[in-house]
Length: 84
Image (cartoon, rainbow, N blue to C red; front, side, top):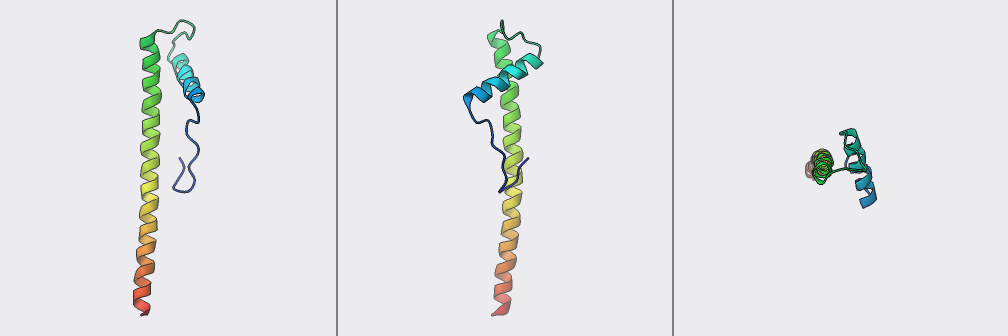
């Protein structure tokens, strides 16, 4: 998982998303040539959940990065006040 200044690219296209859903559907045991709408939706749900978890993880890491930046900024401001 990337951090504040080093995020890897996410799903870049609809084709990439469809490829991922097809791969997940196959892993779930669905025959891609005869896949039913409910099976397709189940595979989409798995991919959506995975993307939501990745988004939450990235947000947590970015917020932690902002927290570190804010701590450093506060420390630098406090040092400025000590020198006056």
